[in-house]
Each structure stands twice: as C-alpha cells, then as structure tokens.
Length: 163
Image (cartoon, rainbow, N blue to C red; front, side, top):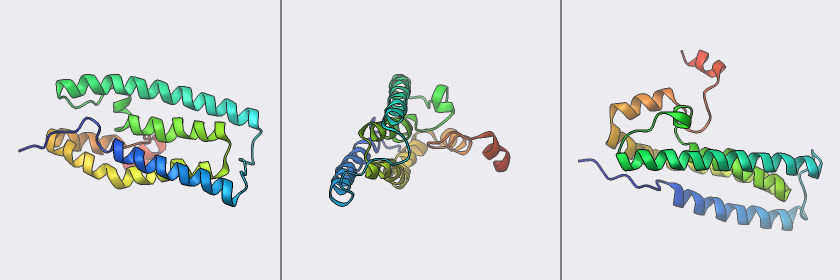
C-alpha cells in the first residue's frame, strides 16, 4: 500500500526552521556584531545583485509551482523542465536565489549563514519526502533520483566524474 503524498512535503517544517533561524541570526547580528554589514561589496552592488536573485528566484518558484500542480493533480512524476535539471526547484529557488537576495538587500553579515542553515535543514529533512516519492513512483523515481541532483544542477565536470 502506498502512502498518500502530501502536497507540501517537508516545506512547512523546513520553512519554520528557516524563519526561526533567520530571526536568531538577525538578533545575533544586532547583539554581537553591532549590525555589521556585509563588508566586501558596496551597498548599491549588493542591492542590485539582491534584486536580480529575488526576481530570478521568484520566476523559478512560480514556474515550478505551476508545473508541480499540474503533475500533482495528474499523479505523474514530473521530470521535465526545471525538474529535469534539479529534483526540488521549489526549495532550490528559495534557498539559492530568494533568501540570498533578501540577505543582500538587508546587508546583514549574519544573514549569510541563513541559506547555509536552510540547505543543511533541507538535506536532513528531504529523505522523508523522497521515501514517499519512491513509494509512489518506485523504480521510475529511483532512476530519476540517480540522474538528477536534488538542489544543484549537475555540471558538465561533475557529469564526467560520475560516469
């Protein structure tokens, strides 16, 4: 008997942990670092990069949600589009693009640790979600998992190493 997939997967727990850590990081930045800003780029460059990351992340997130909803409702494994490049583009868009973009806009040094903690939390929690996907899609998901990385696209160099 296969367990019913949850539309939100690990998302709610992952988001709660990320938000709690973000609040702690902002507080620590204020308390320990006296609101220390990111030291290696000018504010205008940080803001420009931040806006670019947020816009790119939102576009990826919205497109991924549209594709995910179609596939979820039809009960098929989604392996095309950005899901052919990374298995979890919703989590990736937030962790790699949107949150770092926000950190650059806020210009808080401790904020740089937030995406790192989000990624670590993702790696710790994603196994539960992937077990359900294996239960639902079996060998098809195992093959997909073998060929497509969870959050970072395979690079040509990495593909050559994996062969």
